[in-house]
Image (cartoon, rainbow, N blue to C red; front, side, top):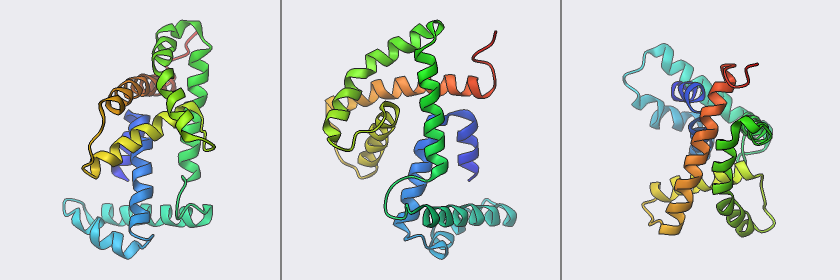
Length: 182
């Protein structure tokens, strides 16, 4: 919760990946708030009782949303899908604005990797930006599992990461009304 708030203000890409990880963490704990209390929240001995209560309420509200939205087994919460949609809309605006030629160039450097990933997705094609996030999340999961990453995958995710970092920077500027000034 504290981490999510900070990430959302500072780096929207990190925030979204973090929230996807939280969704999977909640699933790993079978949406059981008591287990989350014992095995996650109680381990934060540096937090005040108030902060621990807020953290409990945050996890509890996410669990409730996951149940209501039918994403207990897979998928993403609407709040995360909305964030992704906001990022995708900004992406389209940047591509259509000639003053962001550097961004467009970075996008076109990344596009071959996006096309390849979407081709591998078969029937499960997603928007380009979500494909980029899926690639980075997949890399994160491989690393957490201690699995080896091929050089091709590493090169692709380096480029995708560079591209999303640029997009996240523009998102922060846009969020602070510093991007599209007259």
